[in-house]
Length: 261
Image (cartoon, rainbow, N blue to C red):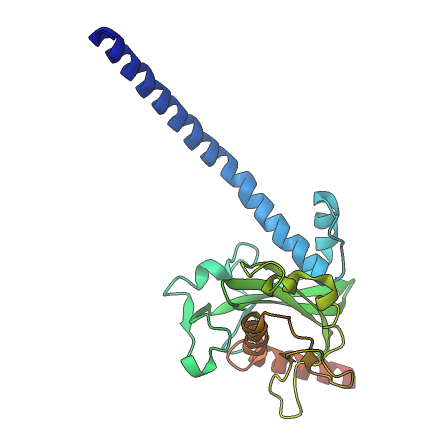
């Protein structure tokens, strides 16, 4: 091969590399808004599924229509008060948890979820029927065996009785810890209670099958004890005094006062 041919080959290869790089970069940039939109839509879908408002087959229009029943509010986890000076629609608790100005370092003895940091504020979602609140959805996350599990816990308006639970993002082992996605396992949760007589979260995923009479025990995950422990720790942390506890106390007191009027 002549030097000329070699040079031409190198030039053509370089041009192709540059063109391909430009195309890939352009595609990544141009598709990002659509990817972000789909990610937000998927989270909304999972929230609605956990709340029993749509099925897994729901498409975009049905999801957006059903989401009109959801009222989002932002809560200060330290005080339990609503936050009104931050735009709730654009607030991202995952990003806030990584921002030293917006996060909270969880004391080791309190960190049942194993996450070390959380956002100071969190969204709470109210399922509405007109002016009436039908249930309340809490975003939760915590460490499993291999990953951070992100999901939703839906409670009845007494904020003690479970209506549903679902995890929309995790990396647990399929067939083992990944069984947290199994509808049959999730169907055990509705009707269970969060808090014991002492006011502390008592719900737990146990080894083996739960006793029928137990208000707090959830069937275990075969071969996935650490994932099961992670679910227990996650739910107990977010329902406890270091997370949604102050809000739950204020909300239930307010409901009791209104019911007496």
